[in-house]
Image (cartoon, rainbow, N blue to C red; front, side, top):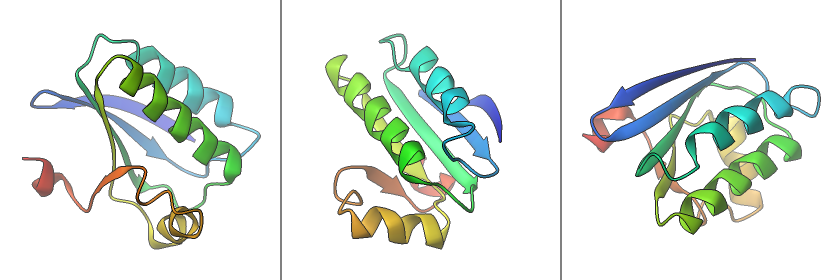
Length: 107
């Protein structure tokens, strides 16, 4: 898994690539917690290049969302692969997260 940071206007974007599972989820948590500490008003996780995510990855996203809410910040997901989106829908987490189809929706 690879993680990169970038900015889109006022949003801090974390670009995640590769599979997210129990073996590497700690990297995702560390990256998420480094930018959900109240320094940024809006965090978006770009999942365009994530084709697999297990429950530990979903748990990391939920923790990021909760941490941003604690700082009255916004947290969203973007460019979700269909397989990952289906998992979120099964858990009804598609209602928990703000989800953007593309970067164009943010602007």
